[in-house]
Length: 175
Image (cartoon, rainbow, N blue to C red):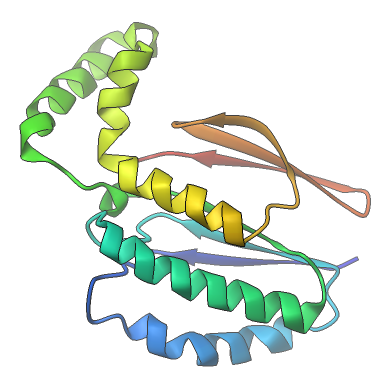
């Protein structure tokens, strides 16, 4: 059994000037030689998918990952999975709410997480609304072959069973 994990980070998709988009075929060519004959694969993208959290940036990212994932699935003949975790660039900051968010985050630093209600959490995570919409749309087109054990804006836990190899991935939201 061979599991291949492709880790990508800090791609920073922008509305324009995305060198990685034109390099996708070359990326696939490099990867395909490493994954030939694999039993399964994971694409894990950790942080800064977008440059500034805009829907337009996520639309470009969606098409990029959709095409890469499709190519890998067709080449390997296995389902594979794709996972994402946000970074600070995945936030779309609104200056109106930034002061309130800053006060909440300062309170958490001083008092700990026990003071964090769902309402306050919602305000803190609101800059990631476009990211979460991106994740929901990606899940419609690309599979997660693991079991979602825990799904929360601050942490998702996915368990995989690859032919007896148990793998648990904790996706911490550091944004």
